[in-house]
Length: 420
Image 1: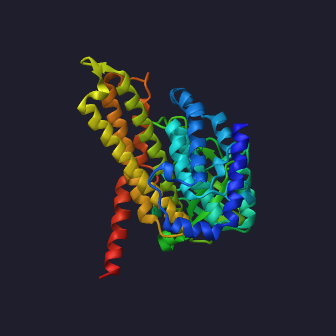
Image 2: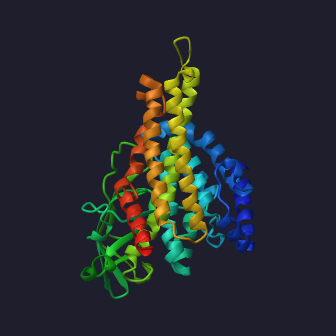
Image 3: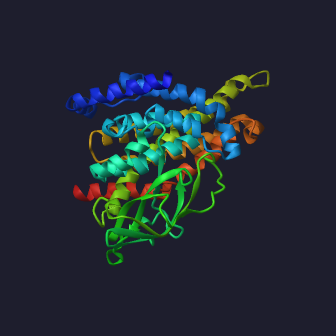
């Protein structure tokens, strides 16, 4: 009943948003939020729903999923029932029709419960559903969004990186050649989240090598197509309940209509998708930071040394203070990026700042949590070591911290040049 009623309430809110879109845009354009208590009722509902679900369904099982490298199938089905596996998709295609701020809030709370569930949710929403929703035709949305946002539906994945290129996304060697009414795709994509569970993938391939990144196009590729196979599952440091593997396409044939957007628009689609995806990863990193803080503070209140709880020791207090300041600062940057996206304003720089700050906060908070716990932080009896392992990837995928610095600096330099 909890899941059904929440999805119904999300649908009611989405309808209300549609009928008051102009008023909402005016309000959000002039309003920013600095704490959960300031959020509108609808956003607080998302926060409370996801927090309750994380505490009851995710956190108690996250350690087991991690140790067993097991996909949290039931939890993902529950997320779909809650409307979170199509959170930003309009209701017409079985989505919840919610905004980017709702997504950021949900990502933090879900990832606080389990970072692996968070990345599965993020890759599906940000990287698979978004580009189809933003660039797809009505027919593509009906075929490739509706079944993936519906209860009992499938998940999708995003194929951009390759064995020979990561940050250099424009150096794609995967090719797509038009043969009559079919595209023939050949190549390999690497480090693909949701690879083993996905029923479809957004794949970027070169259609015209002579114009470099302007010759990259995007395609919707069903994973059951002939010639499509998967590499071995990667044995990862963290987020081990999510699958990561290569997508191998040996002359895979797909219908001509599976081209997403226009020919040569692939690089633009990828970069725009990653902008929004960085809000999702920032939310995931915030969740890891929050989980680390929860773990450290709870332990400090209970553990005694020198005749008193270690929470009364100034060194421990300094660590807790630094953790909370870093987490809260990153949250404000994340919410700012989400609000800009909701207001249809440029948010590339802000999303990069949010992702950079949140991922580094996650790593720092996880590190300090282990320091607070001491030896107990180094063993799997406590979740601190898992948070530490999970945090590390947030500084790597969807643009490394080094790439985020470049994105931020280039945008700042452009701004100053315009004003000179």
